[in-house]
Image 1 (cartoon, helix red, strand yellow):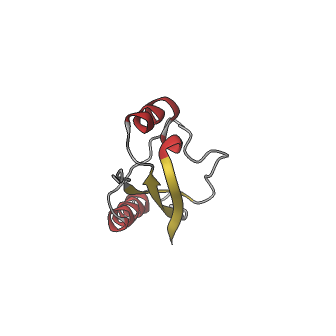
Image 2: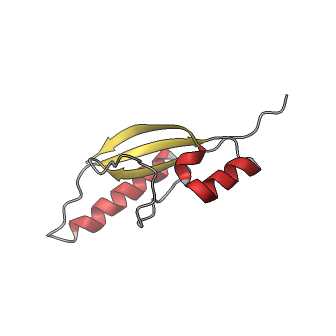
Image 3: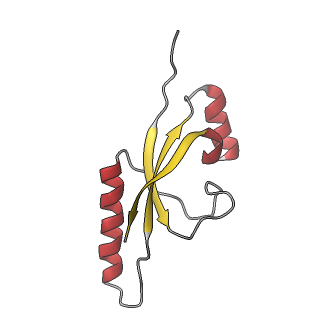
Length: 98
């Protein structure tokens, strides 16, 4: 039996920014990372940038772990036609920062 490979990535979002469809395209792309540590470092760098702007507040960021379905020709086509949500096997919030 051949097991097709799934992939795990991390991203973040502002707490409270959830829409009905988390993975719907909004015009602002999510940034994805290979590891939880990379995602946390990205959030911390964003906080540091926001600190330099007195009128900005960083809010609370949620670090999310996503796992894809096995990447096949069909799932790749679903990704292209229907967006990221179509190829997610699982999704969870793994850390709250801020």
